[in-house]
Image 1 (cartoon, one colour):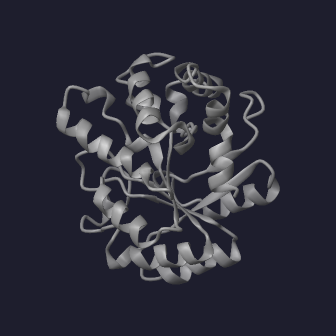
Image 2 (cartoon, rainbow, N blue to C red):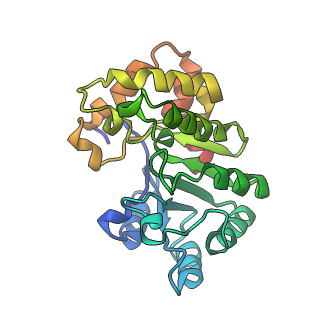
Length: 250
């Protein structure tokens, strides 16, 4: 982080590495000015409610990240799992009441986990619940000729029109069809995001360590800075820290 010029980081778990709740909690305790951490929870486990309370009350997590994707997430394990179904709605109720943040990786457009309508129901029922959608909704960069996927992506992107929904920009180079730094095919998707929902709804991220296959930590910062060079200094400040401070540290 010091090498790349990054002051703070949000530690969002990917369950394909295995559950790391204690590891993340220890990192946050050791470097509280550098890290804030998100917990992983399987909402379908028999002990889910007890585990949720332990993570929230004993380990102090104020963020819960749900990897919903088919390939590496919850919908792959539980094909009928719905964001607006009974297995998960109790979480949203507690999270809204206690001011928690929910981060969602909804997988790729066209997949069973890409539950845009479920998110809309969730945030309409819980208008004070802060929700972050990861990876800018996974724009279909490598399938940009597919108009149906593009429409589905834009519908998910527009969830950030709700006042309590934001989008992170983590992982985007992985969708850039094997391009090298600075991943030029990302530029039109980033511009559309600004035009449709505003720079204040976006927050930079990397998706390290997986994204080190595509670039160094400084490159993953600089490539997005390059694509947003046309924005004002205030807009850039929001994307590269201000919005994350508001949502995750606020």
